[in-house]
Length: 489
Image 1: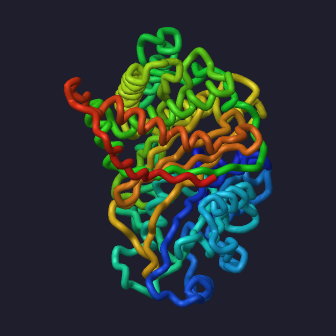
Image 2: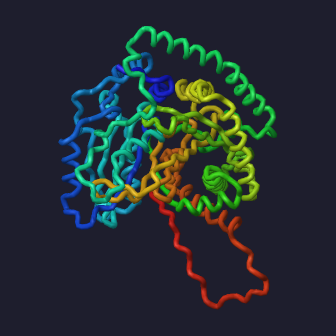
Image 3: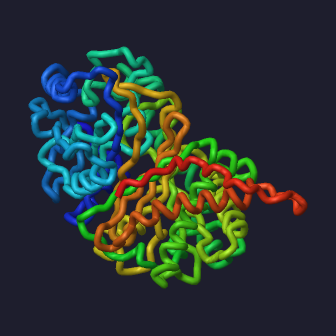
């Protein structure tokens, strides 16, 4: 058996009927030219019959009951996986629109996973308009985080459009680039040395952890410090109780558009993402007369997995930043976000890598306790919304000759956090996935639309050049710029 880490086990502990803790990915492919009508049926049949299930796909809980998940969270290998259960073939009524695809994915994402089986499902969805199909995969967050999930799904794909007879996703093993312990792990002397090293790390990290937590407390009392601590964001309609039904929406932008704005504003790409999300939320709340006087805050997962480590499990830390939703002026809003993220990054970087796991657990423990005790959505939230930015593959990829056109993250939400926005880059584009509670946030898909309009507004402010006053007006209308955004409801 393989025991779960404390952070991975926490996702099992907070699982409930209203808050399933799985994450997903929606990939949209275009069928190869000249593909037969049975292309997808044949692909699914091959996926199910001619493969070996590799870790972590073959892991299931050793003790799947609620008490077992709490007191003895551990994986064991399932040697009799029923792929007919885990792999589903669905179809939209042709020609299925992206809106209909979004409705289907929303329903699939609302269903909890079966804890008596390996915690994943894969849905192949045919019938999408323009000769395309979808691949929606979901896994429990205790098995995988955003970075490792993207890397795992990327490994099944190829840069060669002519490659065929490719492995199914669950047949590809993750690779670890770091050196393994090998035979040393079997010796008592090695285990003793490892225990001493772990104790030394704890002792050495303690002063840094105390200093970091003290600064968070100081920042709560002195907002001019620019470091945003937990529990300073206001209660809002984003932070109420949630139900089990989800709604999913997407937006798709060219990375070059966002990078041009970042360069002009001397900001990071992540700052621009936070600005777009914060501006969309400000407008969404204003329309409902629900905008708080104090700024909303974002919880931002930060990858701490080494670049050469392709293992699974959760390897993230966390920082909190202001979204400056109280600022009416767009430039002031962006400047406030930049100052907040700069302070949060400096705070996180002041900690040694060996202390980041402990810091993350200390920072997140009040949030996890809220969920475990039923207080989530009933008191001030640790932060108002989760916003992630996950780097994905840079080159176009293929599966069995089918080109991957877009890839969208489908994330989780919980009591006190009815909205999650996760971005994933792919082949020169940035794909936004909005996951929200259907009942707590009706009309959530408007947020996706407002994000696109916030991007156009910022381009006008930062990039548009003022025309000379003496320049005559054109008699013919200039052509409209082609929009690159899409929305799935």
